Structures are given as C-alpha cells and as structure tokens.
Amino acid sequence: MNDDELPGLLVDVHEAGGRARAGRISCEIDTNLIFKTHNLAAYFFAKWEPVVFDLMLLAASVEFCDRIQRRPALGWGRAFDLRLPVHDPDVWNQKAVSDALHEALELLTGDQWKVTFIKRKKPAAEPAQELFYLETGAEAVIPFSDGLDSRAVGALMAEEYGSRLIRVRLGSKKKDQPKDSFGRKQPFMALPYQVKPGASHFVESSARSRGFKFAVLSGSAAYFAKAGKVIVPESGQGALGPTLVPVGQAYEDYRNHPRFMKHMTAFFKALLGVDIAFVFPRLWFTKGETLKEYMALSNGKDTEWSETRSCWQDNRHVSVDNHRRQCGICAACMLRRLSVHAADLTEPADTYVWENLSAPTFDAGAAEGFNKKTRAQKQYAIAGTLHLDHLAYLTQSRAAERPLSLAAFQLARALGETEAVIRPKLDRLLSQHQKEWKTYMSSLGPQSFVAQWADNDQSA
Picture (cartoon, rainbow, N blue to C red):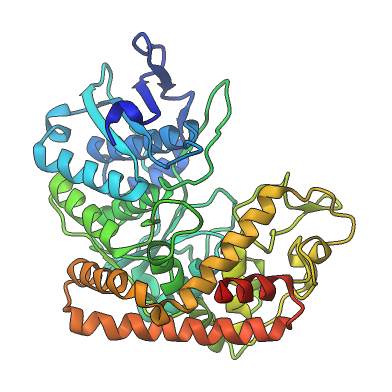
C-alpha cells in the first residue's frame, strides 16, 4: 500500500508559545505534552541527560499521534509525519538511530512513520534533583500497573531480586509507594508525563503505542540504574496470542512480543550506547499458571490480585448503579476469567458487567438494570471468545502449521535460541491453554452463550 492511500497525519511538536507549520496539527509542549516535575525528577535520580528527556518527549508525541487519528474502517494502517524539537538533532538523525526507531514503531503499530528531528530553541528546564531511595546493585526494572500479570509477576520477581528490582509505574492510578520490611520506600518511578488532545478529544483506542511507552520508560529507568535488564511481565497467551491469532481484523499485536523488544534493544544501543535486555520470565506459561504460582507465595491468602483491572473500557461503558466494573466479555476480561478459573480462584459476580457467562443469551448475562448494551460490545465479546478458542485449537489446524513454524522461527531469532528449543515450548504453552479453555467452557455449561459461540466456531 502506498503512503497516499493511507489516512495521514502531519504533526509538528513545538515548544510553548510556538506554532505548527501551515497544514499541520499542533502538538505543544506544556499544553498537549505535560511533564510532571516531581515524577521527572525521580527518573533523573542519577543525573540530568537531555537525550533521555528527548526520548520521553518522543514517546509522548508518538502516543499523541496514535490516539488522535482514528484507524480506517476498512484496513488498519495510517501514515504519520512527525517532527519534534530535540537538544541534539545530530544524535537523533544518525542512520542507526533512525532505522532502529522506524523499524520498532512500524512493527509495533502497523502504521507508516516518518519522524524527523530539529533543534530546540531553548533547552528543557532541568528538574531539581530529589533524594531518591535506591539500593546499589540494581539488576532489573519491571513495569508496574493495575493489571493482573503486573501484580503477580512483580511479586514473583521481588522474591528473586529483592531490593535489586526497580518498579516503573505505567498506569495513572495513584498508589502509595511500596515499602520494604524496614519501612523504607522501594525504588518506584511514576509516569513522568501526561498526554492531552487539546480542544478536541482522543478518538482511537487500539493503543498500540503503549508498547513503545512501556519500553521507553522502563528502558530509561534501567539505563539510569545501570540495571541492564527489563522484565516483561506478560504471560504467554497475552504476549504471543495476539500475533498468533489476531482479534477480529486487527493487525498483529506486538506490544509484549520478543520481536518488538529486540528492536527496542537495538534502538537503545544506537541512541544511548547501552545493552538493555528485555526478558520474559513467564513467556512459556499461561496467565493461570502465573496466577497460581503467585498465590502460592502467600499460601492462597493474598487478596491483592482481586483488586487488579484487566478491562480497557472506560467508566461510561462499564458502570452499574454508578459503580465502575470490568466489562467481563472483551478479550482481556475473558482471558482474566479463564485464568482465575485455571488458578482455582473465584471472583464476586459484580466484578463484571456481564456477571453470568452461563446465561443462555448475551443480554441475559448482563447485570440487572444495565441498559447500555451495544452492538459493539457484543462484537467485542464474540471476537474475544473466538480469539481464545482459536488459540486453544491452533495446533490441531493443518492450516496453522506454517504460521506456527514461522512464529517459532521468529521467536528463535528474537530470543537467541534455536527453533528446536523454541517449538516444544510453544506447543506446551498452547496445549496448556487448550486444557484450561476446555475446562473453563465445561464449567460454564452447554447452555452458556459463550460455550455456544465456541461450539459454533468449532463446527463451522
């Protein structure tokens, strides 16, 4: 597809008081891209480096572009032409840096990107340094959000690394900074910037650029802490499933995939001259297996997992009696419910808008009094169910053998292992997912609307 066939967006990022060129969308620093001084200071606990500030500005700018341009109704890709001011354009315009950046963005988002860099008029204001508690000998960084994998893998890795683990918050929900057994604050970096659309509103929710934000922020933290390692908390279904079986007609989702992270390792090497490895301790395990291992740490007494959120839908679509829930039927919620069941755990019915997946119809499964059912929600539900069902039976499909072989080849290259080592691990993951999925479908009963969708799919 040629550039001129894609919906395009021309964006100029500029300093406060400046303006975009004619025919281009304005993205103003301090108005659309707002850096939080206190949180920024936490990131620069070692020393102020303008190139890393520019890196965060780039991540924020990519998010702005991704969210302000709706994806086409037919097709997927868009074309972005982004220009932003940096402290040293010569560094950013190096071929190795530019190539690695564009390869990472295009694999991640499925869009075409042209990113150019110009000289800032004034240097960015350096935040005042603050006392930031950090043990010497940091070894790894892990992103911390309100998600189930984040909470579970964070706890598992804390058992292994102790105070040598640094947490980076990617969500916006404010939590107390965690403390160790002596009451001292643990390394914990909050999100250093906020992205706002200005007078308009964000129209795109696919949020593929979130993967770039994750890699930039956690990689920057690893760089400053001299940790050299970033832990990707996603379990196998979430990391590999969206590339093996894309949801609906969407482009493959590489946000938590080793292929994308290998590009980010190359990007950091070209830009900062450091080797930052992205590691996947739970890549070959299901989310249910990860949750079960996490619960074993507390002999099943931990309840924090139930406070996590997996659903991406906002308050307007998932509130019942003015109380925010999770929808319970999108791909993320379905994987969560499957995993909770696989870990022999339960959740209150009112955790979800769709309380009862054993109901005979989609409408009957929703909470009483919920009157915001939409056609789109049902489509999300069907797509999420069929995604997990297709993933469960992938190894039994003759048509999937070539894609699975290609996936094993790509994973082997990204992880630095042989296909002979990777393929059995991939097959075991898919086999375990199938076992969990069959058991879960059986638990819902034959009258379940979810089970009926899955059965109809298998008989098609």
